[in-house]
Image 1 (spheres, rainbow, N blue to C red):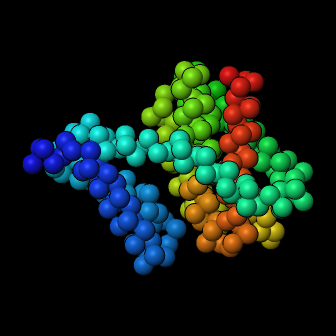
Image 2 (image 1 turned 30 degrees about the vertical axis):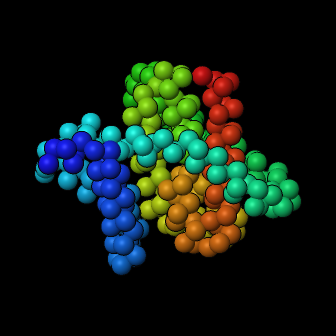
Image 3 (image 1 turned 180 degrees about the horizontal axis):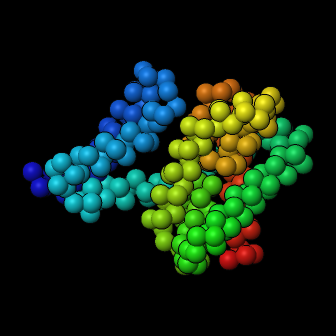
Length: 226
């Protein structure tokens, strides 16, 4: 049995099956709280605890999945390219909105870290929480941050964004689908974009566009301040 758990295929299969289960449950229950990523994390953790499987064994397959994260980031260029006409037409509000979102995210994290007395390493780990995981890790690690903390922060941000973004859009009466999509993508990357796609085609497209632009802006800001 231990040979099965030590195989990288085990970690890959467990990750795929638990996430697939989460997607099925969300489609059936139709509630934002039933997030596929949350379900996958809970189910995966439960399997590891019940069968007393070491994390190192599971991560044999997890590292293979992580290997595809960086190349997948290049696919963000597709979202920008497919909406290049809209970007040319509304380049100023799009760039201004994404810049405002990136700056607000990093400033709020920095302020809270100072308020709660977190050290420099923890602060750097949390600063890029609102961009997609490969970009966030590439920002945090060279500056002395801790990659596991950054990954967890990015995941939590995406989950919260997908859950509360529809409520916030209604609360602040955001009626422009372009503004709604940019806001969701700027603050909660791919996790929020999955919800933006459900809200509408334009919201999903603008949210995907915001992921790429905010990632670039966050990297540029980090090069200056870190």
